[in-house]
Image 1: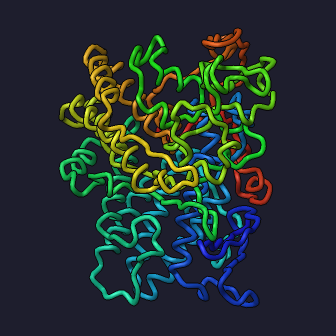
Image 2 (image 1 turned 120 degrees about the vertical axis):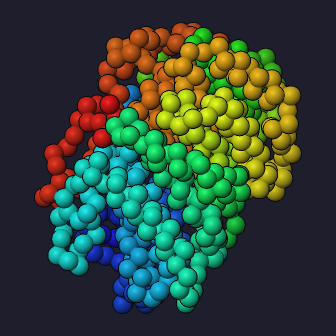
Image 3 (image 1 turned 45 degrees about the vertical axis):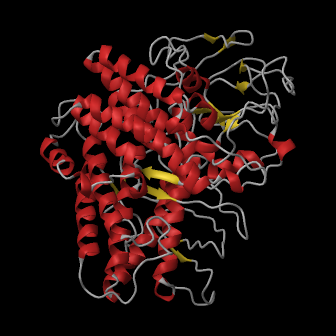
Length: 559
């Protein structure tokens, strides 16, 4: 077991190899390298490092983010996650962040910097919840106890960890409300909320709502969720209160969102838009949202090609899945065009999922625009947003855990999903400041958006109770494209959205795109209910369990 304290700032960045979750090692890029210790670094730096590290390990474009995006069929690519073959993701980075948070909690308590302590406890609870949601059983009670002589921490059961996370959240709120005078308080070093205590408390309460919702199948949480929803102003209650980690444009340092990386890549093909999600958004899937054309398509997808016969319709090599200018590959494909080089042909993630480019229908390759000019990359990572909170509420009403009008809350969630796109594009991405500037229309006010919402609500009205829940979870999945980790949890606990399923494990043996021949697909691996344990952890920790079989190892909140 190894423990690493990883300090990251926008001014100075240092790369280290993070090996595991135990053995003591400390790195501080702004202190004397001959005498670095947890007590010799400013807590402001440790907080900044932890926030960025958590985000970098979860966001779309990260290892875990991209794996989960493939697993929930928002994304595809020539990657290990294809056919559900990914290994452990995010383990080392998230545990490194928790080590930093523990430094803040210990030192901040001693120094009476309770605002730092409160934020650290909320982030620690959130990060451990993700580890449980993805892995099931993880080191918790004995983690980071090197100073106490514990170098081989046991793995705690997820069902044992979850109640302690609610306690940690309550402690964090209490620390934030502590009236003791702090020698210093978080400000710009808190990238997420700039030290806004009220918003941190709202985030903590909304994390509780999320966690209670996730355990609703194995625990009676009616009282808890009703109490939280009875005071909506104590939850994330507007776009400006959303729990998000900002990224910036390239400047003295490159602070762009991880998903923007494909714009700079010399070989593209590992981070492509899923044709399954595309067809649902296009309204051509016969089983869900049929004939409802989603106006978010040009915000989510940037096409480097025009349709066939247009000014730039000829691909570099044969294409696999093509619909006009939209070009991608298919999950589980065994077709002849899956592995060809099409870096200036593939459609890329657009302005909303990646901070990239809005699709104006011109079919210009990113190389012709210039990767540095094509977008700002300044999209925030969305831990939990106002729209997400509303989808949680709609789910709880629809499943009978709380009273209310599920349709009215679902309608509001749709409004805030579109509002979220506008809020993020205008306040964070700022496409007018890109080298090749764009003026992007506000999606909330488009006639196509009103028509889409009307169509979705009509389908909702006509659906059975189960179908209504499917509409709620499917729209949440579409909205959650930048944070697919939560969509992975949603699918495993609700069965929605319905995912693409190649044979023999599924029932699809081929896919016929609008422009092109049929594509053979196959997948002989069952759906992974969790990620495999980190290999280094298993090799270095004598108290680690045997490697799991992800296809049969379920998280405690699954039935």
